[in-house]
Image (cartoon, rainbow, N blue to C red; front, side, top):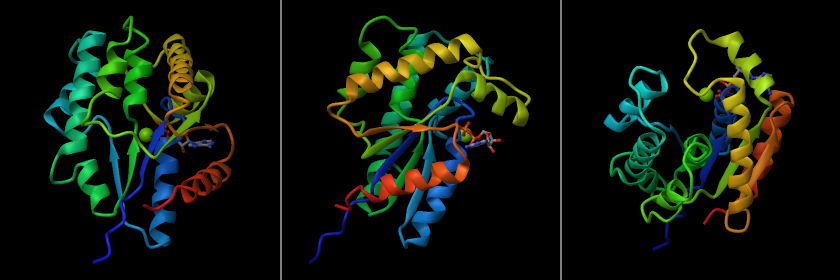
Length: 211
Ligand code: ADP
Ligand code: MG
């Protein structure tokens, strides 16, 4: 019997307003037009842990950086292994998984507040956290990001100050440098037009083999 091919695991990263939701929708549409099955997902997930994270992000409950990193990592393990609609299950069924934020965000946001390698090790050395086939980083300056956010939204999350976003962006870069040898990470200029970015991403995704 022919073995079913595994789906591709595609992660989108970038600070708020970078265009992740916009591009994920466009990629999903194009992949489906190709006849592929697609599962769209995001972190934090809808788990109990995800709810705790959302409360903390909204400033409703206060958490330390280590608490946040640990909760995000726990939520990510659940995201991978949950037998009903976990990432592993979907990929095994031949479905492409498109994920809005992953461990790179933990390493950039919480990692910039925690000294040492603890958050990095916890995520990169965890046997139940899969490395994606590609990470597409939509790169935008904090100025551009905040301008886009302010147009569309009333509430602000705890990380959305200019200074913090600048720090997070630098940390994203240092994480990517560190992972450069072992992962497929593409930095996309997110200041371009929506269509230009969509085309660039589509070409990158189509170079990913179907295993
Ligand atoms: P994210 O999910 O990364 O926070 P969104 O996709 O929600 O970003 O986009 C934030 C805002 O910026 C939305 O109003 C969206 O329409 C707009 N936007 C997205 N991509 C672009 C782009 N390339 N150029 C200009 N505006 C954009
Ligand atoms: Mg979004």
